[in-house]
Image (cartoon, rainbow, N blue to C red):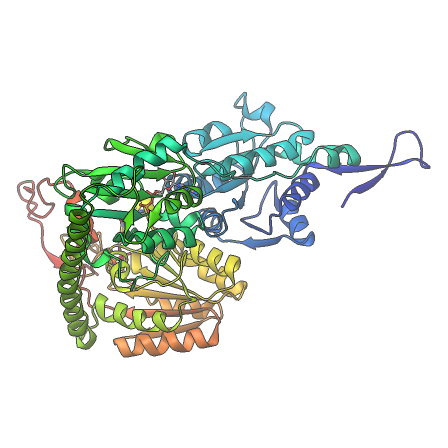
Length: 604
Ligand code: ADP
Ligand code: TZD
């Protein structure tokens, strides 16, 4: 992989030379990077070619956001930073959305971008795709670095990998100007400038006093609760978590991407009694979960105002971000759970001086707590079963009709990696489709972002080889829909199921003009995949959804099932409609004299 050139001294003394492009690829290979997700163009096309020729898989996308989301998902699934490669300025900016989203979700990734000539960019002389990318990336990334000399490429890549993976994982931007990519240097010196990162995310353990504090709190709890977040799933500490929960008998609640860390049908899961569990818990052990909006910031009335929080998180600054953390456990989930487990015994946590004096009373209280949750869970499950049963025969098909069918087929295929985005599709999908294996569910995450669908699905297929089912709202799908071509081009086992209710949230909004309503959409998504050689299905009943999904999984080839959903089914903004501002509604706002708005269905 080095270039032979004739040295200036004479034809008989060839010097081995290398260049920036080769050094980047060599550094990635040295650090065991197996896949790059990206979009080619000036100045990185040759880098992609060289990476592919050198044995790194290059997955070429149609849009950098999708490539970036794929890199982020790869980071979540493997605990190694996913790599996204972008061109300068616009390509870089397209990728930046994904880098910011990865950082927000604490997924490790590195966006490597080519950039234009520094001496022109810095004087704003108007270069091809001119932009100060380093400055632009900084506020949106965990860190941003620039390499200014070929001899620093190895250092830059090592630093990027270390920063992305260690501590709280996140997105790192690495800027490599075109001139550095083309810079030639002595091959031996180039090779000597590269290194492999040792132990990219070292274990982090809290001190004994911190563990004692947490144990004492748990030991005295009458209504304890464990909340598992996606940090717990990311940590790949499944056995420690499971053993701790089963040994102590404490009920637990999985956040959406922690579903499957323990199987959803686990008897200690409080997922189907969620609101009661949050409201009544007196001591809460947060494991890789933040008290952000998804947990109502730990506030009453969702939570008991007297609840005490113990938090396991690798990031010390997360503590006290919303509520007082009575027992912070700063460390990685695996190490901390191992320490907690050492101090646990069946049915109880052992306090520093053995069981607390009123142990009998506590045991009774905990039994009552479990019974209370079980009773609520029974009621909720029965209610949901009734809704699913009614939806199973409803025509036109409802969200729950299609989701019930998907649930049944996914239950037959626990190996399926599930991707889920949309509003109603996400909220109902999360509660309907059970997961039984860790890290098999990827969704819109902390930002509730649309557009992760195809990128996450592609990475899940590439990184794991497992079949992927992406359950998408029709609006959500549109953000990354063109990547269906990528799925077909790389022949990936991705089945996209679009819950098509003809709109953002719903498809029956009335328009006040001759244009369609702002929320209205119209598409035959099954025809889209056919254009690229995949298999399209159109399903109008739950039975058709199930048949199509079974057939597509058996085929193991790219497929898209367009599910025709009742346009009047669905809630505005899903279950977070309360976040919409409560101004005058658009249709009740006063209209200027003489311009009475006409109300029409959907427009053209
Ligand atoms: P969820 O949305 O599922 O509730 P969050 O994304 O809010 O989860 O929280 C994940 C938390 O996990 C973050 O605060 C992050 O710092 C933390 N985290 C990530 N990886 C680890 C790890 N290996 N050990 C401990 N904490 C981790
Ligand atoms: N843009 C981005 C990047 N993220 C967003 N979250 C939104 C816009 C706003 N938004 C939501 O929060 S959900 C959603 C949008 C556009 C789509 C909902 O419609 P859908 O799902 O068809 O995907 P349902 O299942 O029909 O509700």
